[in-house]
Length: 80
Image (cartoon, rainbow, N blue to C red):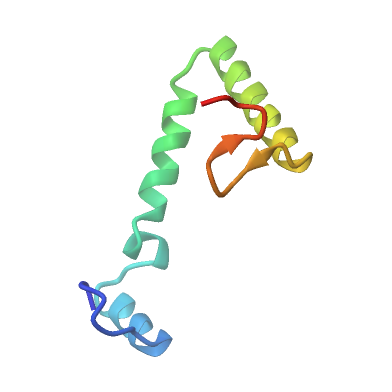
């Protein structure tokens, strides 16, 4: 399973989670990453937090207007 040699069915995954008393987020280590980002954000000064929020809004607007090319990871107007 770990090396991707075969796929695991949902029933097997649920049994693994129950055996080790894990949530899906814990199993895939999703909760640790999201908590880490939140903790980093909260440790910032209020001014820095506002800058982060502004950047998030900028990125959302960029994705909504289609100026971000998700395949290449570059903005359409970027020169490389």
